[in-house]
Length: 115
Image (cartoon, rainbow, N blue to C red; front, top):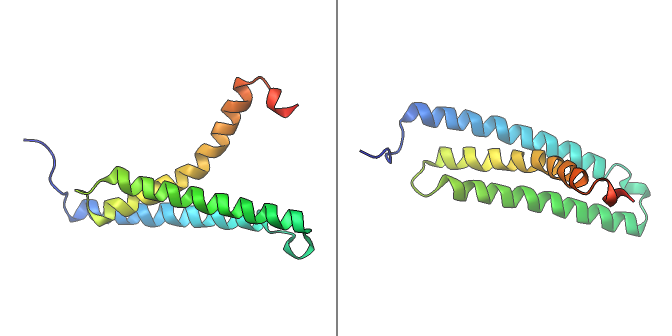
């Protein structure tokens, strides 16, 4: 028999706790990144302000896309708790994979991107 049944309440509780932990880590990381982006908000020139708006939009867009991707990965047959868990873990992973992709790109091109 295939294992396609929805799991019991114990698994839902674990998924809920996991979603809360990963969601809190994502919010904390986003809060830190946004304070770095907007640290000189009162003293920015128009160009710096546009750049900060663009960086904020990219950050919010990446997190939203990763969350929707996590819900899609969880599938329709999963519980709402599992969908929240997958959404929060992929949102956090989107932050962690971005620096890794940058390191791989710089290593692959042998530093030609920095010149």
